[in-house]
Image 1 (cartoon, rainbow, N blue to C red):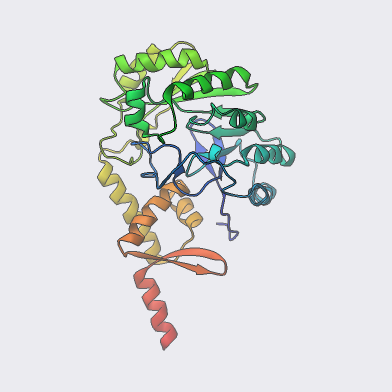
Image 2: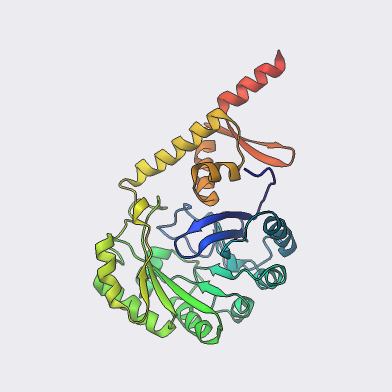
Length: 325
């Protein structure tokens, strides 16, 4: 377990699609253009389309350089994290800095909502792989599933994805996230497939709920059903849903995660990185449950030597008692 603190770089974490993926967070937690009903990080707290340098490129590059110098090389450096990465106006500069630091390929996980902007397309041109998402085949379900910022137009978003794919020299894999009884039915998938033909990605990846979503009515599509719906698409298509972790009960899964974190913190204070590593969960997912535990008064967050630690109340009370003795 490393004693070095990283604010923007996490992992490497195992990825079904990218192998060992070293993650980079470019925006504050849940700063996004969408508020998707299936998001495993919870509801969006800052829905925006404002592009600015939320995190300084040089701060991220410094962390990446330190990480790459001390640990085995990952398969990909992935710009993703806890919000929409293309909101960071410095993303193009960061991709350029990564290319100066290493030959490890760069992947961008984006919801695709801003790719219609020429400045965003230009910023992503030096990446190796871009994975945008498309979760609906028409404006009605787009608004229902993704709950986009009011200034995002469905048709403009589709046209932007198609334009970018035609310009981009790297690979574009399109992720399609399906929900049971909503978009996971053949008539709706056919609409999505029609949009996919227009976008023309190198491959389509079908995904569904595998972790507690923002809304409990966002329900996973079964593996058998997903494999059948894959036949609606032309070209290369694969089902990437993680069925080994599909929760039987969203509430139960959420409670279990919180209980595991609380149990860990009852033994010793931990940083966010410690918790994610110990419990094998994504740092941004851990953050969601930590916020719940703090709100419920079960744990505390304390700043010590420039690092944030989380601890259970009983440990903190015990330490205060020892100090007074």
